[in-house]
Amino acid sequence: MDKLIRAYNDQAFQTAFRAYFVEMGIQVSNWEGLFAGMTDEGVATILREDESGQVVGFIMFSRIEMTSWFFEDRYGFIQEFWVTPELRNRGIGAELLAQAEAFFARQGIHKMILTSDTAEKFYLKHGYRRDEGIVAKNKAPVYVK
Image (cartoon, rainbow, N blue to C red):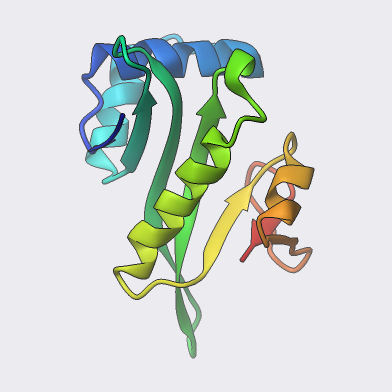
């Protein structure tokens, strides 16, 4: 079952997000502040739950605007994306990514952007391309579609 959330006080989500950060080797000293900040930033998340209600994957995304003195462009930004390791390569990630892209398409946003240093083959398979002209503050490679 999938559900869209915009507030991050859901315990199942928090457990999954902590597992994701452990997998990435990221330590957080203030989890409550992190989750509150996600809510304040207007981030949306699609959660994939199994039949017992346990989160087995999620994709977090938001709208961003890139502007200059002459141009303005809107993107759907994939911020965080995770599928539990034991269920990877079964289509869950592809389904979650497609749902996020459809969410933005309904808002008239047809360009997607993300950074990743772990899943290049996945993103290339789904129509993304690496864009060397955009530099991410986290220094990870940037992919656009």
